Length: 200
Image (cartoon, rainbow, N blue to C red; front, side):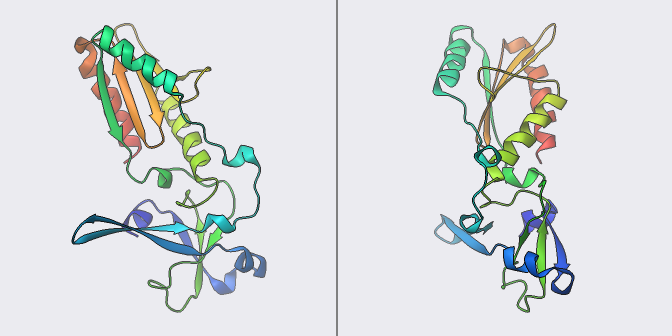
């Protein structure tokens, strides 16, 4: 819930201000729990997207990079002594904005009276279209930072300048960054830090 509030994922709409159609079509939420340590359990609130109506494949499809792309970049980095950096994007889907009007019912643990609905402003985990929305958002952000999207693999991005060249492979919520040599590592770290700030 802390991440949901921090990213402003939803707006609370009083139930009396919602139409009957919005109430009928609102999705339920559920908790997904994962034990991290013997004494700590991580809980994530997700929408029950399995009850969404059938959607166009183009609205839900999110590609992943081919293993060939990853292998080639790793082989190049080994043969040319490139530097490889990795990064994990926390709560990745919550960065992506929603482009349609979609309501969910908030958890009863926080709203025992059930007197409101959530109007989603960002892609909540569990939605069918969440991966596609995240991939679109990531692509727009990378292009705004000066990267070029590869035509043969849409998950490969290249950023080049006179003295530096950087490749970025997006694998779900992880990215792999490769630079030409150690001399340009500081430039690449600066570029990577700019990317990380966009997703924090």
